[in-house]
Every structure is written in C-alpha cells, then in structure tokens.
Amino acid sequence: MSADATTAPATTAGLLTDDAYRRLPSWSPWAFAAGALATALLVLLALGAVSTAGVVVLGAVLFVLSSSITSRVVEGPRRAADRLATTLVTGAFLLALVPLVSLVMLVVTRGASSFGWAFLTTDMVGVFGEMTSGGIAHALVGTLLVTLAAAVISVPVGLLTAIYLVEYGRGPLARGITLLVDVMTGIPSIVAGLFAFALFTLVMGPAYRAGIMGAVALALLMTPVVIRSVEEMLRLVPNELREASYALGVPKWLTIVKVVLRTSAAGIVTGVMLAVARVIGETAPLLLTVGLVTQTNTDLFDGRMATLPVFAYRQYEQGGTGIDRAWAAALTLILLVMLLNLVARLVSRWFAPKGAR
Image (cartoon, rainbow, N blue to C red; front, side):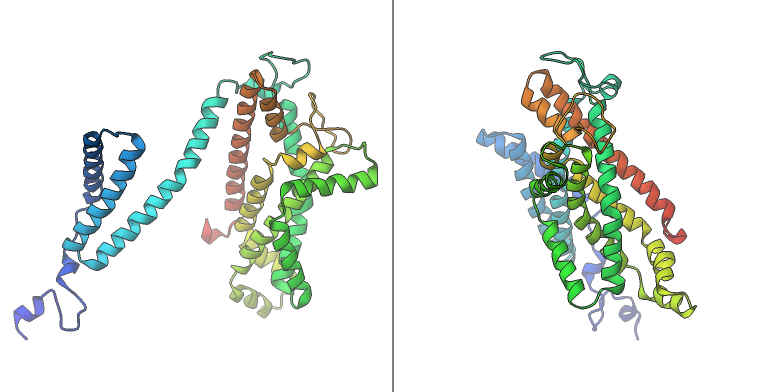
C-alpha cells in the first residue's frame, strides 16, 4: 500500500470524508448572530420600520439561514443539519424563557416598592381605605398552615397509592385507580373547592368555615400530581435492585422501604414539591372555603383564615394602595415557592444514594 493511500482522508468504504476535517470555528455562531442583527437593523432602517421585536425576529431568521447555508457549504449536509437542529432547539428554549422572565421582572418591579420586613410581619387589623400600612403576616401564616395540612393529607395517600400501582397493582382495580387518577388530574380547582365546601356543609353545617376546608380542597388537587410523579420515580428503579434484595431473603415490603423508596427518594421529594407548587397559588378553592380575615388565625379547625392568593386577589380588587400590596403578596408567593424548591433540593440531595450525590 502506498503512502498516499494510507494518509488519504477518504476511504472506499466511506467511513471518512473530506467534510470530516472541515469545521467552522467555535466563534462562528456569535459572528453569524452579530452579522444577522446588524443586517436586520439596516434593512428595517431602510424600510423605516425599526422596532426591537422586528430586529430580533428578522435577525433570528437571517441567523438561521446564514449559519445553515455556510455550514452546509463548509462542513457538509450532516453537520449543517446538526447545527440547524441545535439552533432551533436553542431558539425554542429562549422563546420559552421570554414569558417567564417578563413575568418575574414585572412582579419584582411592581412588588418591590411595598415589600419589606414590616410588610411581612404585620397584618391588616385596623387598616382601612388608602392607608399605606398593613402587611401579610396573617396571610403568610395561613398559607403555610393550609398548604402543610394539604401535604399531610395528600402525600401519604399519593405515596401509598403509587407504591400499590407499581409494586402490587394488577388487574381491573389497578386500571380503575389509574383511570381515576387521570380524571382527577384534570379537574378544575373550583370543583375541588365546591367538593370541600359541600362536604363540610353536610357534616358541620352551612356556617362552618375553617382552614381545614381549604386544606382538603388543595389535597384533592395535590394527590393526583403526587401519585403520578411518585409512580414515575418508582418505575425508574431498576428491577435488578429488587431482585438482588429478594435473593438475599429480604421480604417485599422491606425491599420497598429500604431499596425502592431509598433509591427514588430524591425524585419523590421533587415530585412532592411540584405538587406543592401546583396548589400553593390556587385562589378559587380557598376563596370559597376559607375566605379572608384581617388577623392571624392559627387554628385550622375553627374560623376563617387568610391566605396569600386570596389576600392578593382582594387587595387588587380593592384598588388604590391595595394594588401595591397585591403585587408585593405575589412577590412573596414567588419567593416562598423558590424557598420551598431550594429546601426540596437540599433534602433530595441528602437522601439521594451516595453515588448520585
């Protein structure tokens, strides 16, 4: 075999081609982006229709066209297709971030003016009209208590149901439970509130109002989310781990507790926190069941309780300075969800298997 044949970049089998050695530099996407935005700006200036959205949209189209065509010429069709797919996925991700970032920025800018320590530690007792004082201490306590009670009700039910469906469930009963879970996942929140209201009205009377009513309504919304998330986490546990435990003579219930749940603990905690985030901002069922008061009530079984979603709704409906309080309450709710997710990450990291930390 000659030296030319051994050093040629292409083979008769087609394993390598000249395109495999031709690559655009790593900085080329930034160059294409800058050129596309500059071209879009010049084109819109010439047309007299300059706007930020127009420059971004036209620049994105020009970026996709220029990068794809150049990559196809220089790198070949396969790498060009790869670059095009990467560009489209990245663009979709950035597009999905736009409403999220804009929402967070709006809440922060509108709520920061009234947000503060005094706002978090005072209630609305004695606050009337356009008074700028008053805070959300009573609503914050109520939200934490009602959500905690809902979690205490829904998490054990959801966890045990998911264990049954994955480890024991066979036949029509398991299929029926799965169908009911699917139906419960799509029920409107107001229906859950009406159910809790009707249940406690029949048992306790029409005048009864308490935080436990809201907790039951939120638990109805949390339970299917917990079941679905825990079920998926349990199914991800390899069967080899179960079989190894059975081979050592460990009974099934202990295998579930010590092996299955221990392995999927991080995912279970994450799923529970997703369920909490799903219900902590619900307004309709809480407005129907627990109502709103101006002072702090820590008794879940007696009297109305204030919650952050209902407080924000009522304050925004009031208008005036109440709108500022509503935005500040919304900011507090977002911060509370972020804090709970941070705690969930720490807990899941602590309970995760050593190899996954």
